[in-house]
Length: 407
Ligand SMILES: NC(=O)NCCC[C@H](N)C(=O)O
Image (cartoon, rainbow, N blue to C red; front, side, top):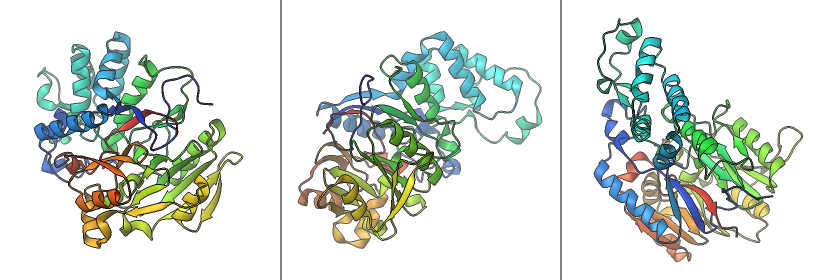
C-alpha cells in the first residue's frame, strides 16, 4: 500500500534516509525566567553552544547517509509565493490572540513588508513589542491590560523538538494536535509545508490527523514499531480519544493491524512515551525502570467506527504478541542503579534515536545508560548535549524521521 509519495516510515529502526530538524535560533534567546514554565522550559540554554551541539547532531546523521531537511528552509521556499505568504501571515496573526483588529492589521502590514526569510524568522522567534515600528494609534483596553506581556507573537523555543508536531506513519502524515498553547503554532508550519512544498505535497500522501482536531496527540508518544504495529503513549500530552481516532484511520487505510496504547504516568518528567521508552533494535527496547511497573498496555484493532480494545497483562507480553517475537529485551536505563536511572532519565537517557537497526544516537552525558546499551550489543553514537538537554528532550525528540528503509 506504501506507493508514491516521498514519506515512508514502516519502523522505528530502519536505516534513516531523511529527517526534518530545526536548528535552534533566536527564539531561545527570548526565554526569560518569568516565562520558562509557560514555555515548557526549566532552564535558559546558551544559544551559541546549542547551535554547535545541534550541528554535530545533524552531522552524526549526515555522515551515515541521512538527508537533513530544516523547517526554516522548507518554509522559506514555500513562502516565496506571495499568495501563500499572505495566507501564512494571516494565519499567524489570527493565532496570536491580540484581540485588537487595528493592531492586527498593523502587524500584518509589517510582516507583508518582510522577505520570506524574515517572515519565517519572526514566525519562529516571535515578535517583540519593541520590534513593531511605533505608529500613532488609539490605545484599547486590551493594550493596557496585556501591556506587560512582551510579545505580540510569542516565540516557539520548543520547535527544535521536531518529533512532536508531526509524525510520519507508513506513507502518510499526522499533523498533531499539541496539548499546550506554547507549542500550538508549530503544527501550522507543517501544514504549509505539507500542502505547498514540492517535496512533500502530493495527492498520495494521506493525512492521518490534523492539528485542527479537538483531541491532543503529540509525536513523542507515537512509535512506529513495524509495518504492522504502532505504539502510542497515553500521557500528559496525548489523549485516549486522540489515540482512538488516529488508530482507526491507520487501521483502516494502511497495512497496520495493531496499535498498542501504552499508558504512562501523567507527569512532566515523563511528558511523552519516548522519554521513558524507545526501540533500539528489532527485539530490543530501552526503558526507564522507575516507570515500568506503572505502565499499562492495551491492544487496539480495527473496529466499526472506533477500535476494539483488549487490555494486556504486561508491556513485554504486549510487545511480544503484537510483533510476533519469541522474546523481547527491555533494557533498563541507568545501569541498574535507581538514583542514576532517575538522574539520567531527566536528561533523556531513554530518548534514543535509532538510525539503523541496533544503532542509536544518545547524549554522551548519560554514561551508565549508554554503557548498558553497549553491553546489550547496541552501537551507541554519542553527541554532546549540555545545552540542548535544557529543553528536556533528547535525540529522538529533536528529529522527525521522514523516510526510513523498510526492514
Ligand atoms: N518527544 C519529547 O519528549 N519531546 C520533548 C519536548 C520538550 C518540550 N520542552 C516540551 O515540554 O514539549
